[in-house]
Length: 56
Image 1 (spheres, rainbow, N blue to C red):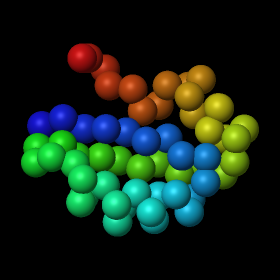
Image 2: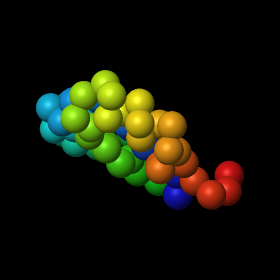
Image 3: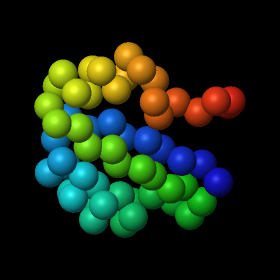
Image 4: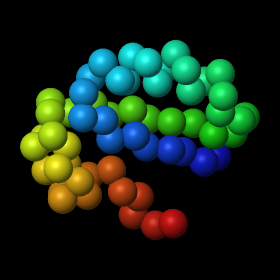
């Protein structure tokens, strides 16, 4: 199974993606929407690489 991770700057976008993405993603593809509290929180998360898989 494949998984797409979305790192979001705002929590409101998570609500949209949770409704929209299941309608367009093919079977076998899941997603995780991770909201952040603004740009600085998002940048910190990216720098810490918290959501990257350990192997590809």
